[in-house]
Length: 133
Image 1 (cartoon, rainbow, N blue to C red):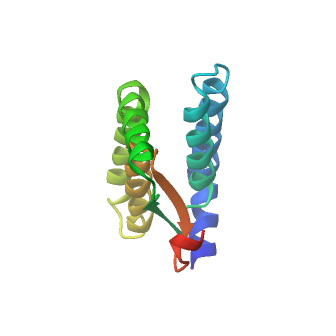
Image 2 (image 1 turned 120 degrees about the horizontal axis):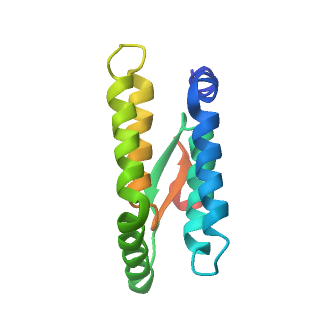
Image 3 (image 1 turned 45 degrees about the horizontal axis):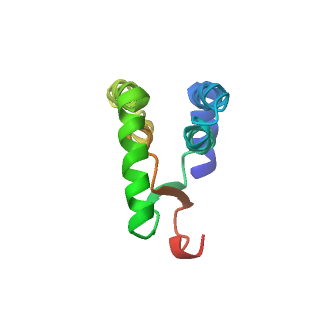
């Protein structure tokens, strides 16, 4: 079912979403200051291509890592995270109008959470041990 969901997702918009994230990442990478956001954008773009069978978990880090993640997320939210998350939430609402679209709506909600605050999180396969990935 994961493969079927990913194929349908990819054909009906996942390809464009992933390319959009990667394009934004390339633009962010044009400056040295934007490189951390570009890296996060590339991760989210790859996740946008094939979201079924993967989940977002908190990355374990020390106090300094959590502080930098918080600072990065605040900058991200102010510059672009809120409208990306809003776009995913609107897409989730539209997908949820049909029974068939509910799994896709759940993926958009997962992407909205990640789009809002990508720093301090990692993407893992469902069923794998997050500590070992």
